[in-house]
Length: 430
Image 1 (spheres, rainbow, N blue to C red):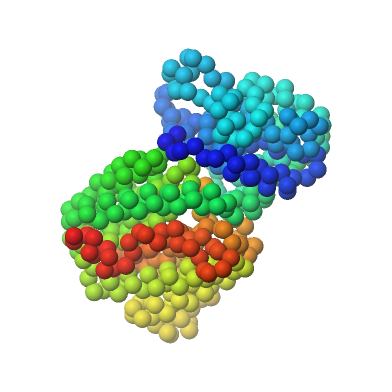
Image 2: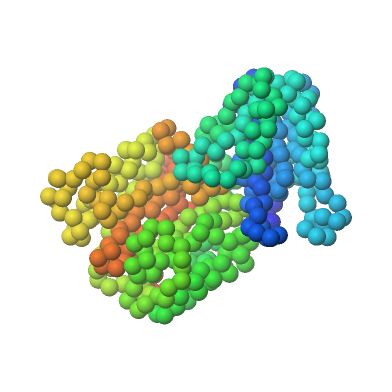
């Protein structure tokens, strides 16, 4: 890992929150992700399952966390299972966690090697009535491969059919959505690294630069600041490419007079930031580009003010839609007649702003959160309105990351990243 070690107190708190919601006399198990093969002996880089990381801080493959708060003995209440390290592994793959280092990372004292897992689990199941299985129930999830977690669930159900089954995900959706102060600090670090990358670009972008050269500049700046790199696949969309919401080819030349929509951000310690900025290739916005840009900026600023405790997700998006409708009328893109005759299921503004305004942010870029429940303090959200005009061959999206606060309105974690037209033009021409 490139990031500085996180204080284990965070993971101790996270486990306490989770176990406080468990049923009496129950066990919960969490598995690391697989290392996924490509072909021959090639693999994708390892990415830890966010749930086991959230609860333990362990960022290593073939790790298992077992929680049993009502276990008969103290040393059985929290157990980590790790791949046993040795000199051969250290030479070929690098040092893995020792039992002592695993305690320093997680705050868990009972650490076994992975070969002992089935024996220890069998003992725990003789004491327990219920098993919490960890299924992926995120509202955006589409899972087409069998994960390590899914294989474990299948095996466990066959091995222990008489036990009750409960689900970890509803608990995690609720507790992971409300961030501890340490987590907000980590997201802030990711945002600060993103800021460095964006500022680097403002003096780099010129006519005829390619989208992939911009991607390379960002990757360089992110990694040199202890990030693994992009928090998600970067979108570097010049000209009409910006009207493809998930454009990721990043292979075109940026032409004079065009805009570049940059949906790019760094991760830090597995925590995501999520930024979008739109900048002029030539260093100056045209009057029309500036008018649309400032309309999007006004929507972003007004939308952010609405992210307060007690706000309902569905109503929030309705209110943002009203603000966007007004801006689009002002730009001459829709008329009052269009609004009067609109389909309530697909309002008139959706022709130019077809996606949502916000999503939860944290360990996942689209983080956990129960959308039917009111927004709470210390939730972190993106705010990302956009206006996309294929007929004019440009699209503009602006996105910040904000923390919901009990009082005083949301706190913008990207407050230092240039977003005003004058500042962007000044930096690009300095």
